Amino acid sequence: MRESAGEIMEATIEAEQVALVTGGSRGVGRGVAQALAREGVAVYVTGRSVADADLPDGVIRICCDHRDDAQVAAAFERIKAERGRLDILVNNAWGGYEQMVEGGKFTWPYPFWLQPRWRWDAMMTVGVRGAFVATQFAAQTMTAAHAGLIVNISFWAAQKHLGNVLYGCAKAATDKLTADMAHELRSHGVTVISLYPGLVRTEAVMAAADFLDLSNSESPEFIGRAVCALARDPQKMTRSGRVLVAAQLALDYGFTDIDGRQPRPLVLEDV
Image 1 (cartoon, rainbow, N blue to C red):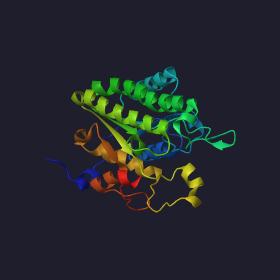
Image 2: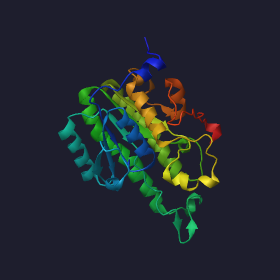
Image 3: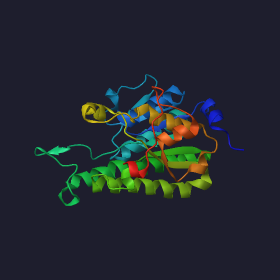
């Protein structure tokens, strides 16, 4: 019989679990790392600037550029050597947000024929390929254990044009990775999902707070609470291969944001 939401939230994540959050120096990745650490998970975080990140003391930082397969391999080798297991992988590393302004012009909303081509490479390499390579390494450990949770941070741009063709293509590719990896990992006991945040109060969003409606926004740690709830759920495999919305998981599992608020789940028509 499936456990109730209350029983799942009262449960704790299995002792000694190990998680890796890629791109966890700031924003959503940092929030996920914080939430997992609060649950007693041994958390590793990768990132190019992770040495200077504001993370809990117990979080282990690995300087890693996810464009470099050798650095990624070294990160996974370190986790294996130090812990001998990996239970949770959160693929959050992303590229393409650099140089929003070029030549004095804000290029992000430009039509695709005027987009700088480097942005395609950045999103597809750091975001999509980065998730693929990290999951390759994680799957080797998780399939041997016949258990594991892989979360790909994605967004509604996968399903609807949201101002940038390149961004939409990269997020759609992320969701396709989720669906097809889940298919191949199902018989090995490994769950793979795409997780959609809402409007998250990241550092960049808060810098523009005077121009935004934050009434239904989410803290970065709220996304981490969604990951924790999934990790606790013994029936999470029933969700594998699917797109999940963090705020809907909060209703399903019975958790709130860190300020006690209950963000409203977005649907495609809202974005």
